[in-house]
Length: 154
Image 1 (tube, helix red, strand yellow):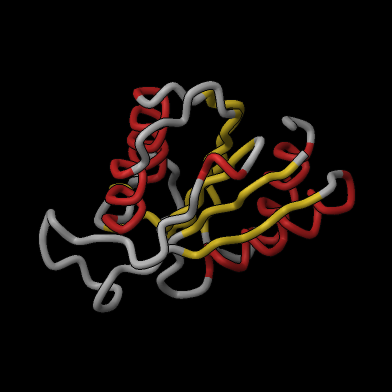
Image 2 (cartoon, rainbow, N blue to C red; image 1 turned 90 degrees about the horizontal axis):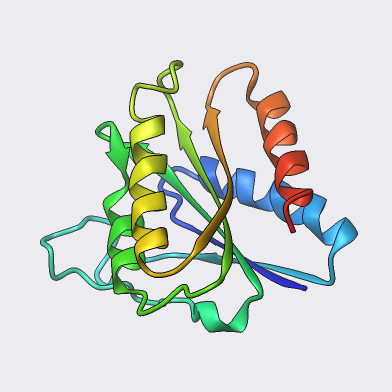
């Protein structure tokens, strides 16, 4: 099985989670790739016409994991732009995770996951699981928990 982990990581935290997921999933599966999203012209979203510089082709994967930071209590604009630009996720198995600084999941985490789920499901994707990682002292345990959970999904 080939899994694509597609992330937007502004500070490196989301990418760190993606790398740990890759390590865990690679032990049990054939191929796991990480692809980082970048905007044309830099990381700042200038308007609704902003485009992804390197949009990963989701058809190359049997399953997908999308990861992004929570920004302003919502899904990062870069990930939102990318997900909206994907033509189809028909019958793809998908897991979602977000990283965030504020300690309560309801301070943007559940909203961001909800936004990701809505877009993915509208394009025919099958949501298998989700995870919210708060960037605090307990993050390593939470990352391990999400990695274990995701490894059992595919």
